[in-house]
Figure (cartoon, one colour):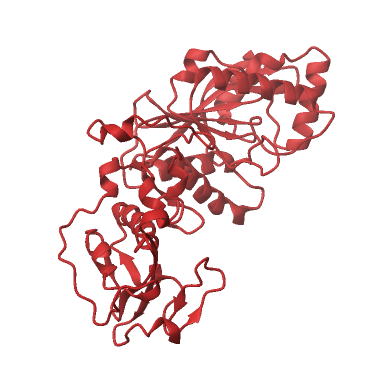
Length: 409
């Protein structure tokens, strides 16, 4: 079993103890597994013999007792990120906004402020070289969310760390406060909240760093399908009528999706000269679409579409996948394709969009368009997959958010 060990370096000045460095070690490798930036050292301390050295000489380095709750939380986070069943080897580095050791947060900051104001402590003492920060693959932020107007030196060191992080370009994550630019400490005071925090931080990591990207061609159907005939359809005419097209053919073209047992998909078509729209419904397999004039009409639909009384509210309720990342991407595409079913002429919308990034083999007419971002450009343009903490499920952004990866020309 690869049990982690914690090491630290301490100095003593007067009555105060400062922890100037600390890291959690798995195995023998010195490679960085990541790092965190917290408020200040808490209760983690050296063993008895090294404590005597610290009291005698004013400095000591060595093994830290891991009974400290924050250390235990960080160990759980790192092992959750890299896998509890995986042999982890490397170091997780722990940095602090200030190095003064004090277990009581409010008292610690007030003491830090007093030491700075008296000239006994330099606010920049905790900063590390840029090259050292750049050696880490990521940085967990968790210095706490408490704010007081009197904590001016704390705000100053936060800004210096933010500038350093910005220059390093090292990616960061953490549970951010909704209204401020601060991050919750990874170890809540309430022990019952600690497993929840670990789960949240692992999920936040996965959302940012463990996203599976798909090439744009993965958004296309990957099976050749022979369309199935529908049981009942109407002759084309202006207005609403039962479509001869079978929307199930669209779902059948995606290998990771299927129609749930007991349901089928059928559609109404709307025509108005050279323009058209459609609407798809999921209905029981033993039912047929009634004539549009026998249906209630959707008040919220701009064409007052007909709805059978036995149809599901949303056709996606009748579509299921195999729970693979690809199935969620395919479900996102099918959602848009079926909403566009029967559209032609001025009725089309989805088919005028282009999923980015463009590939070299796409139509040259497409690549000649000048694209403008209508929102801030996302970190990842490609369709991508990650685990969602809220639903504890897999998602492609979300089932309905593929448009956020689409640009309008």
